[in-house]
Image (cartoon, rainbow, N blue to C red; front, side, top):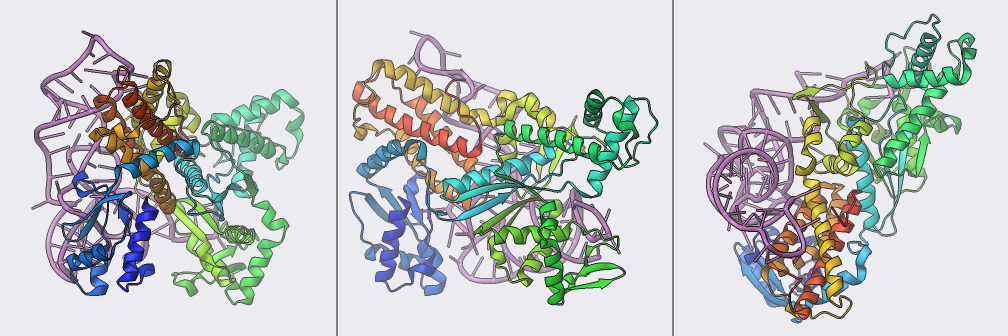
Length: 544
RNA sequence: GCGCCCGUAGCUCAACCGGAUAGAGCAACUGCCUUCUAAGCAGUAGGUUUCAGGUUCGAGUCCUGACGGGCGUACCA
């Protein structure tokens, strides 16, 4: 529908001698039904460049407009210069049949077709279980990936991690200390060690498996770290699976050392005069890119800071041929990615292919107070614990329902109590209700006969119809902005229109002709909700 | 100090690239179940969009400044 309108408007512009390319045609559904089925503000946006009053431009546009009156019933100018369109009934009914035909694919579009994209998310190092702090990242990344798939892209989900370095060393030492404790042997717990109970679990498993065999191994023996990494990664993968998330690839930072790309980045930056030695360290000249200070790439100990592999990693992604690489970053990474971009650009890469999505932190509220989490100190609420309480649907929905760019307050008590008050049930309930009616209707009516859609004349029916048709646009808009919450807002509208329809229009007991037409509408609404929930990674139950 | 993000109803949040009368949920109040799921529907109340300027046909949205909150500003990740 949108495509057709864009087309006829572009044609009209051409007739008026206006460059349609630069005009940026926007079609939107007006808030108020009296303002038509869809509207465009085209005349208003053109007012500045054409130096004419919006009303006059709207007049010209409407005069130049040629449209198929089996599709468009009316076109009128209103307010400051909006052009409002109303659809012809037959066109609406054609669209409805089309929705039913598309079924499980309704909502897909080709705005990103042919594109190879990658979404990198979660990317938590295996030092502990995933916490609610990681939840927003995980769920955002996965739903954005799904949105992109629905707009035609081929998408890889990637988890980037590092199992070397100080963090992991301390993790190994923590496990060893607990292991020794279990054996009643002497060992000091590292000062900044990981205090969580899961460390004891890992140590206990080692003790069960090896007895005291490991006690005489040197402190630095990798067995402890390895056991921890394996166990924790198993746990993380299990958590992701519970959340409906499947990664295509786990990328170990270690690869970047092995294949020489770390060294390559340093030497190439040196060649460009952007890296130099000072005080035994290697520095990146970030002052060249407007920063106050230069940045250390390799510490005087010879160990790289995390920034260097970050740069090499992004270059690896670009080399792998992705058209777009999306990073899902928490606000704490906000300062690091400009360096990555600067470096990649300096090395000749098209950095417009890197798309960094920063989301704001989640404030955990526990017992009415903000709660500071720390993996190391084992102050955390894990995603598993949360899902034990409220399930994965509520968990996903909670993280998705707000704009990524604003702070999200997560009240544990509320999420637990919320239960049936939770807005996710509003959507699921609508879907379940639809299927409940369909089950009943199938017993009474010949639901596979061709319906006479012309009978759908009630205002609640047409409101629902028009809402359903917005679905592909809603998916595309959410994908474009990488903001799944837009889809939730849309689905809420669909559900609201459905519930209203349910209240106003009955099916069982109606004349078969009318009932069949309404069943068709019901199916279309059901398809929309089911497909939308799938993009959010949330169940669409047929019974509740 | 400097940089980035945020500030909208009592609370949690929407508002699509600057568009028509700023919307939901929760909490409060009033109606609606002998008929397809009341986890629902209809309605009442609640706002100087933190404040002060500016840009223009038009500002919650853009610019400047102030105030308030978050996150950065490491040879930590």
